[in-house]
Length: 389
Image (spheres, rainbow, N blue to C red):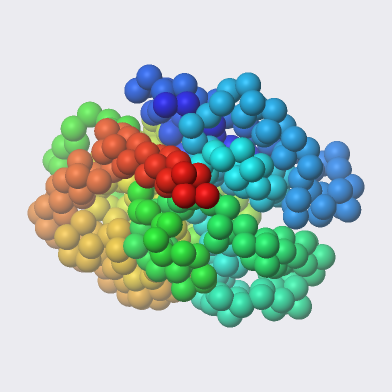
């Protein structure tokens, strides 16, 4: 199969960028021809605000470049990861005009919430689901800027009115059941949304002997619940948690965790620490979509203590592959961590169940099967529609 991947890369590399690279390598390893059309947000540093706003809503440059690439490469399917802001939804119209099926992975909730994570003032906010998101402008939801929020709102409103999201995308990929349900609630056609989680390659088979302590891996920011974790560590007695990551709350991490704040670490180092920790903590106060760190933890046989919130309830089975605690509740998190530290045998069984979950749902081999099924479904659909036209 010939697959064109389209992705607008972020200025600060994140999970989506890693997923794009992993799927690119996976597809090529199975003999497919794969090309990437990529824009990078560093280009915003050389654009006027007006030009960036226009590009966000409709990029003539991307439409032209994608068309030329499709003429030379002739893909069977275009797999889109992120179009915001430089590629823009103009790509979908180019693909439709050329009768090329489009598969769009829904990495976040941008099509429903300009901020993309349903969070306002530290609390879940769903005010814009299924509505024109004008509130995001008055509340300055995106980067605390009314102007930038207005640009995203204009993009969403324009392309909802044009039917871009309902009609020009052949298949969507949601990363879990929760995300799929939210997108259906927000107006996307249910029959176009398939579920396929992220994946990671497996390290060596894990051991559950001599595991100790907890581990946090992720961005150091308020929506990730770092302050919740900091409060829990103070209450949890002798429980230790190592913290890996970077972000705006580095000062808090230094004060709260001292020498156990490890800063940025390589993936190899992270995976090694996952293989020796007793549990991983994911204390987010926002709707996580499908954190790769959970899949990495499961591959290492590491159970996860997560907020009882959104998709995390689907991904982490309470008492089976980890523990759930009340979102934002440091005392409840402390109690769960203390219980985990005091019950190593039960945590080892949860770790074994987490590894079994990984083997069943999150391996590259299983992911490739699901991805190709979605591609073939999209291709068949477009061919059928062309014959019926």
